[in-house]
Length: 249
Length: 246
Image 1 (tube, rainbow over the protein chains, first blue to last red):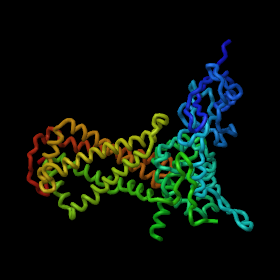
Image 2: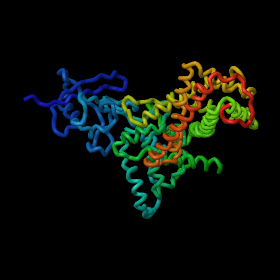
Image 3: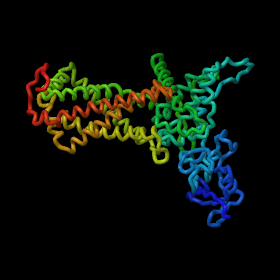
């Protein structure tokens, strides 16, 4: 009986400066297989389809349940989480490439520091550090929780940035994820203390104004975060903040 | 706790650089581009298509409309401040926006992404058309502000060339598309429609508006090529009140 097989074509690159090459692998099909588990099998026996020995594939991954945001890559051309990319739902050969908008480290591994820097630039946190106990925080009403919870689901996978036509080196656009986090923390009763600064930050070059509303971010988001709603809301808040600053200066 | 200054983000060695928090003036320039598209440019488009509609009543009515517009106080100042300069800025900054964006429609063929691309192409068609149209109709040939009576014939003569007529029709549709979706984008990006449902509903409204505007614009073009006013006189007597059909 011929065994059912799975074919993967993976874009390899040994270092940021070395040339990219495609390698083809054929694996035995298993039920419930996903792209990460397929690459784990390749690691156990790194031999290409033409019998040439190679190195295990380098990639980021951690939780394997679409909650850590590590394993974003392009699968059959589209950015998505590799752990939730079930082989049975994919057209074969499955083409796996690294995200294209971030500096490459090796193979499918990219450096997504820019998101971390952006989150720092807008102070995407609730400031509670002090020299004494600040006591319990203010109550968050359920209606507000309903709005905030989906925003808090962001896993920093950067898929929204990868698919955004405006996120590139020319614009330096901050991307949807950071804007959604500004909405989250500006709506938090304690986080709100930094609201004005966050809005001013987002009016800087590469800020919310660079959005072209192609809406790819909200289509691709693996956590279904209402990113376009957040961009719309925050755009208005930024505008009002700038107007207020203008007449009060 | 709260710091007044944003510490500069460390520069990353390669790739897209982090947000330049609270630095630069691109916010102002981008918002100006967005606002000018609605007012005055969009408002002027509506006025222009309404005026064109007068052509359906014949050369004399059209001439009267041209005369009326040119008799507005400070009309040359109005023309430059509310038409030429805003359009020039909107067009040039629009091209700048286009060149900095990188369409990825091949990989993500989604509706919003198509509209993103269409907004750029229709904008380019509009830019080329408006440049041509203003040059030929406003600045070259018979000067219409001084000779409003010649306006119908001047347009008719230009539209007698089928290639130019096709250019006018395509540009009319492209411009109405660009304006209708521009209104939708404006509402989305200025936070007027922050909800999925509100954007959807407003989308239908903008589509209906754009369609109505395009039909009206095409009807205006039709007035010049229809058999009814074939071979209009080179100059007509202009009176402010005209009975239809003259």
